[in-house]
Length: 268
Image 1 (cartoon, rainbow, N blue to C red):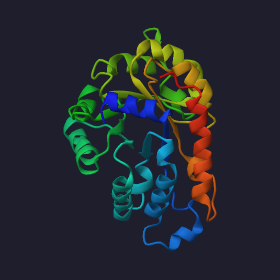
Image 2: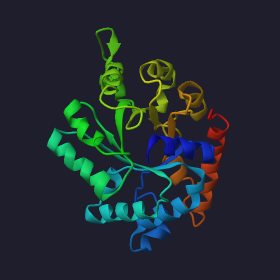
Image 3: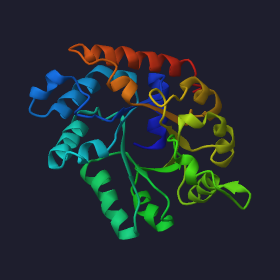
């Protein structure tokens, strides 16, 4: 999916909600465990209940690879049931020397057909470039993450700027607004104005809303650009809104709640 198609989806649906498929087999409704593939079944039902209310899905790869080959099979089947007009993100946080990154890019862009993959920039340009070589695919680089430990390194200051600011400035020269996004955690609402000075036109993927305490309305007010430029991700707060036989209906109601909040704030 290219930049214009993504913006069109946001305008058409009047939402920029991304649902994180962080599917933990220990947290899904117990009655699903009798299914041949409980994780896929859960995902399929969630997608069927919410796909008209969001513009993207973001499977967190750790939840699938932790189950070995069966987990990768669940991921592959999940990708097959996500509607083609929705943006898909492999939350894999990869990043390695060039030839290894080429294999990671091949995995997620060619085999699984994701639109985007999250990448760690610590190893530098040659670890990110292989992901940027794909037409109409996206690299989402970790910038200022939502976890508490982000303060350990990302806010260290040198040459008068925080490390995360150097990341935005440097990485933004490797790609462009059509193939490069950044992760900025919703738990850092006060930093969005400064970040927008560094990357005014790029899309930002914003995790940390819901279970981690980030406020969607505040992020929308501080982080939008002329084409919205934000994908607001919610995972656990939607996936595990209910745990009974009506979990899909409960997840849909929670999704509606977030979609309505975002719709009222979207500027495009």
